Amino acid sequence: EQRASLQTSLIILKEQYKFKTIHFWGKILGITEDYFIIQGRQKDELRDRQFLYSKDCVNWNMLTPANDEAKDSTEVCQGRFTGDPSNDFEVTKYNITNEDTEDENIEEVKSSVREEDRLAATLSKIEQDALIIPRGAYILQPNGDVERNRTFAGMEKRMIFFN
Image (cartoon, rainbow, N blue to C red; front, side, top):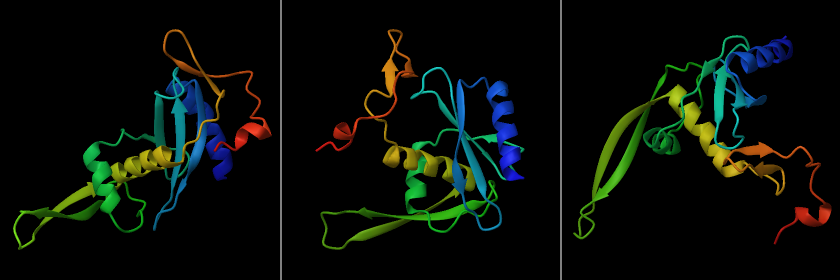
């Protein structure tokens, strides 16, 4: 049922958001509900990427790109995703002040981050850490856009291992 809903949604969302390409990115497990993630790409394959999430593969919401504050909070945030995008996670950060004195003063700073922002920051971090693009898979166009190389059929075995 989810697969059928997802396939239908991909077609509809591609037309609705005018994506050049769209694909299923993955699934983030939550305590009560899971997040299904898709990634749509506009004209520029590398810069114009947008994430959408859904809990039922029918109703989709656009994720706003994660800001620096959400990225910092997400790195110290503990606990699983709940499945509720409006849920607030309490985050405690510790800052060391007056490093020159013998007494270390540790300042405790509490803040909160919404689960939707945490989801966007987590996806950004995964993409930053794990996205690998083989040499020759994309072509830089004269106008500055990056497009998929239609003649790319994979890498030769001797080119796979780069030391």
